[in-house]
Image 1: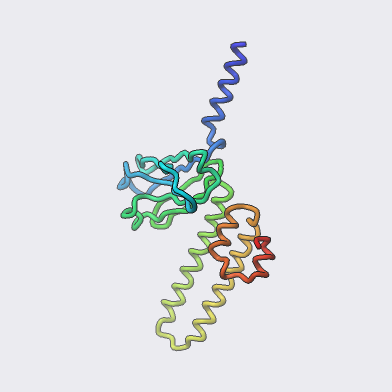
Image 2: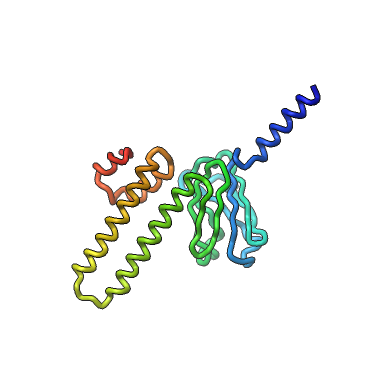
Length: 198
């Protein structure tokens, strides 16, 4: 009987400490300038839970264990406002597993399925924004505005084709729905229906 009780206790303890049973955000920063600063995960929608899930940075790293009531939500990992000038806040979906976050001037999050989707979208958007900037910079003295417009339209069409595919491949999850909410005005009703998101 003692062996059975011990086994039950051990299994229960393993379930509580297994990161696969909850969402854990493990983060790294570029320097020790931020040691002992608070870092937060804050939901994008709805009432903010009080207290929000947070922790302190120690030796350039942090670890936030997400509360059960915050599971399966989209939110952002951020520091206090004045530090966001140097450290870009990052979108994180709180699915079960370990999310690996790097906070820097350009931040990233990966390690779980939907956070990998968000990072793919973010990387594509970063490339698109950079290419648009290059067109503007390289053509600021060009008088042919039609040529500039054509370049921008081609760039935008290629970007939206890629975003369409990301949304279509994720039409049944919260990442796809969130990305569509950001880009919905760029798609026709027919395209939204094709994505299965109408």
